[in-house]
Image (tube, rainbow, N blue to C red; front, top):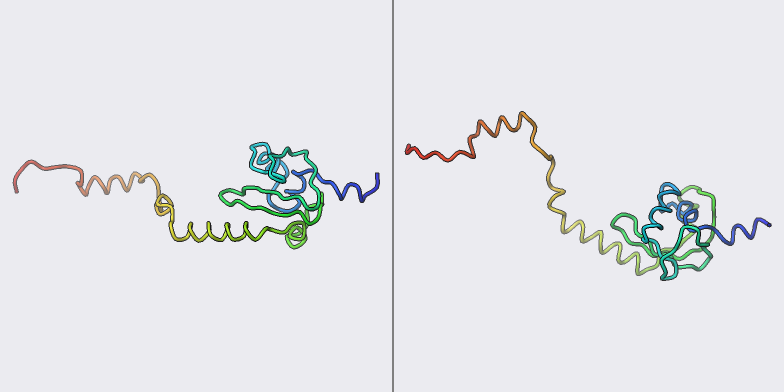
Length: 139
């Protein structure tokens, strides 16, 4: 088998790892197994072969992306090299920017909490404050 044949077809999990969508190949395989990656509109398996021209839809955390495969590679290179393997669709870029703007404008209220459970020292301070007791005695 010549080297050109192996470059033309690459496993989906290897391509996603080489294109730097996921940090490890096993993470990409897990996401594929959970059905979060589609190739040409169909849920794919990790062993599916990716070809130039395929349209891949995937999720990275909260971010949904749709990319067009420009080149196939099994080797993970630097970020500029990985960026040459795909082109993100204009619709995907617009949707991603819109979601980022919405996240900035409508911050999640739970993210505003700087600390979780109060420490023992904080609880003592609250007890000294006597906020929770209702005194029935007139002053």
